[in-house]
Image (tube, rainbow, N blue to C red):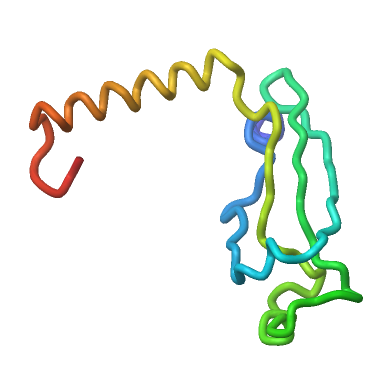
Length: 112
């Protein structure tokens, strides 16, 4: 029973936290290697793309980070089809509601 619950959680959210942290802006000045993985989440396929430096063309300061990222991970991961159009629309609507409340002084100072 508990195993089924864990499997269901893994299916709904198969990502490890924390996600990834960008440690250098050099990430965007290099041709990167892409690793694509297709995940099954909430009944749909999600494309996860992770980006890595080419070990033959590293930024000059990468040695300072190499012990933390021995696989040459850049720190950028993208997800395609993570949210449905309906989910994104609902998130956007909630953002508009929060913004409207802010402009109408609904929140305490420094909290909205």
